Image (cartoon, rainbow, N blue to C red; front, side, top):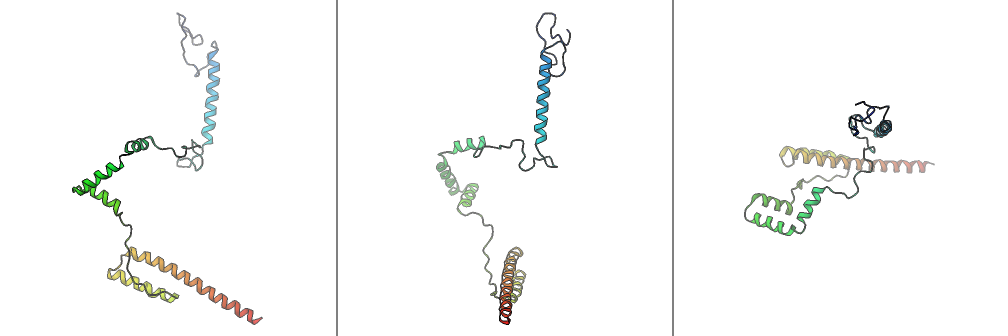
Length: 192
C-alpha cells in the first residue's frame, strides 16, 4: 500500500492520515488539510480574543461564553427537587411539627429556627449620658469604658457604641463649625 494511494490490494479505501499529512496523489488530503488549517487558525484567534487575568481566570467582561446562562435558568437538580416537593409542603411541615412534638431534637430545632430565628445581636440596655456638645463625648466614652470593665457590656458592643459616639462627635463638630462660620460671616458683613 502506498501512502498517497489509499488503496490496499483489494480496492477498499484506507483512510490513513487525513488532515495530518498531505498525500500528493490523493485529492481529499489537500482539502482536508486546508480545512484543518483554517479551523486551527480560527480557534487560535478566538482563544487569543479571550482575556484572562494573571491567575488564569477570565477577566471581568471577557469569558469564554459572553452570553452566559440565560436569565432565569435553573440547575436541573434544583428543578427536579422542586417538582418532587411541589404540593407536599403541607405534609412535610405537619410531619416535622409532629416529630418535634414527639421529642425529636432535630425536628424541634428546625421548627424553632423557623419560628424564632437566631439573633445576630442582642439589644443593649445602657444609659449613655446626654450628648449635646463635643465635651459630652468624653464623658460618654468614659462611661463605655467603665461598663466594659464592670462586665455590663462586651468589648464588641462597646466598639459598636464607640462608632456611634464617633459619628455623633463628627456631627457636633460640623454643627459647631457651621455656627462659627455664620458668626464670622455676620461680623464681616456688619463691618462693611
